[in-house]
Length: 120
Length: 107
Image (cartoon, rainbow over all chains, first blue to last red; front, side):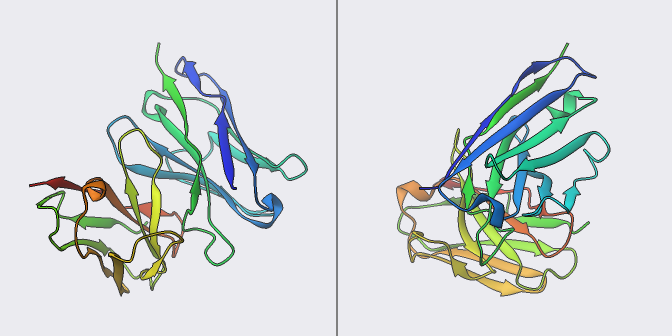
């Protein structure tokens, strides 16, 4: 069974930093791209970032480019999102998500999410 | 950036009825289009990918169609558990973008 378990969320002041983790199990982690998607309270879904299977290619939404960094540790089946210079508008539930071998970017599996609140 | 526009924002339908949700892309996404269902407090659930392929375990009452810029999600006979939020997503080009969502509510 595929499991994605996010952690690392919490309350942080504007301008602060936070590192999210997503522990993956139940599939060959190193074979698939991994993704972060967020959802602000009462709002829709927003794609944040993708990292390819080997970690050599990364993609970011314009809203986080230059502030967030996605990475992965294939030896530990873990995905990360380093978030710096946090703003109030970054407040959201952050989901870790993955596709499958026949469609990497249609997100078949999701974690339950971790809430990040940016507030003073 | 490809803008995804869903219509309508809210749809009121009676159980047992057939309903169609629409999604339009601002430029071509070929068939790289997915549909998701989301219920309060839950992660989204993948329904359709490749515009028309049902994801594993999705009931046959859900079907997707369309290509290029115009897409639809049809639910043939609404069940009580189908009343939820629905999002379309394009993954044809970066950045990946979602529609704003359609809320399907009980009439």
